[in-house]
Structure formats: structure tokens, C-alpha cells
Amino acid sequence: MKSAERTVRILQALAEPPYTFTVAQLQERTGYPRSSLHALLRTLVDLRWIEPPTATGGYGMGAQALLTGTAYLDRDEALPRAIACIEAIRDETGCTTHVARLDGANVIYLATREAPDAHRGTSRVGRYLPAHATSLGKALLSERTAAELDELLPAELPRLTPDTVADRGALEAELAATRERGYAVERGQNLAGTTCVGVRIEYRIPATDAISCSMRSEAATDDEVARVAAVVQRHAGRLARDLRAAGIR
Image (tube, rainbow, N blue to C red; front, top):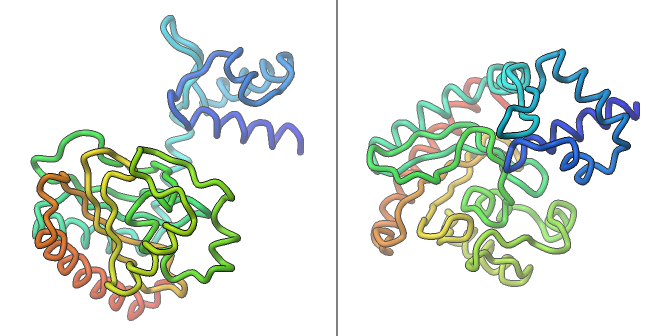
């Protein structure tokens, strides 16, 4: 059991920036004895879960990790319909569009469809971000009770940018505003210069998935945010009805 847990911790470390680590860096992150760490790394390299160090970097994720990770997406019956939905939203709004799922205190991005003129820095499949710093997460957290938020959120909310709302009282005020208007708005809280609009997909109770559109903040006037939100709400509502009718939960 100890070896299995250590193996998982190594893979989790390699899944975080900068995505490559030397033995010394992995030992610092994990605290494992160097001898045990070497043995586990050799096994992971042999099984193609990780790649050995190059001349310019350390250990990194291998092909087997990708193959295994995509099985999570492949078995998800809701995802093909959600991808079709975010493509339609992208085409109608001109915004880069995402679908993500709440996982504890974070959201994990399941799919992204970029606008033709999208600037880089948009989220990618598999990216993990604190829910309180994203419109996707705020949309999903807004229907949780205070007790549920206590269970989900850490005592200290991490800041991703100077604009991240990291105060619990201020976050609860944002969640109340989200409930009232039916969609979440996040301005520069996880990526400076970007504004996002998020809407829940209500095919599960409570909702676990949400859709968001991201746009440059200079273009995110109140009227534009309201326009984009109306489009996302319409498509997310239709998607939720289709998923419920198909018996997908």
C-alpha cells in the first residue's frame, strides 16, 4: 500500500508545473527516501508512465499516462454532447468556450474550443484550477449550502492573480449574485486580462458540470457579458434537457 501511494504521489507531482523534475526536486516535493524514489522511478520508466531525464530536463509524464487518462473522457457519455454544445456556443458568441467538472475544491477542464482569434493562455483539457477563482467553479459552488462549502473549500483560498477573490465573505457575496442572475462572472481572477462567464449544466443534482466562455477583458462590456451569458444559458439548458431525456446522469 505504501508503494502504491508513493507511486501516485510521484505522478501527481509530475502533473504540476513545470512538469519535469529531477530526483532531488521530487525528493524535496515528496519527502521519500532517495533509494525508494530511485526504485519507483525506474519502475515507472520501464512501464512508460514517465519518461527518463533528458539533457535539459528531469523526469516527465510518459505516453501511458496519457493513454490511461483519456479513458476517463472516453467513458463519459455526457461529454460528446457537451463538446457539440460548446462548439455551437463558440460559433455563436465568437468566444473560446470550455466545459469543466467540479472535483472537490477544484474544477477540471474536460474540453475546450478556441475562438479563431483566441490569445494564448486559455485552459487546456485536464487543467486543474481552484473553483473559487473561475466562473465555472463559481457557477457550481453557487448552489451549494454553507455547510457544503465548508466541506469543499480549504480554510485559506489561494490567489492566482491580484484580482482573485480569496476572502470567504466576498466569495459568498459573489455566489449570491451568481444565484440571483443565473450565471457567474469572473474578471481576471485566474488569468489577468480575461473575463469569463459560467453556467451550470443541470442534469445532475447538485450540478457537477458547467460551461464557460472567455473573452478579452477590454471587450467584456456589461452588454457583451449579458449577450454571451444568454447564449450560454440557452445552450446549457438545452444540453441538460437532452442529457436527462437520454437517461445520462
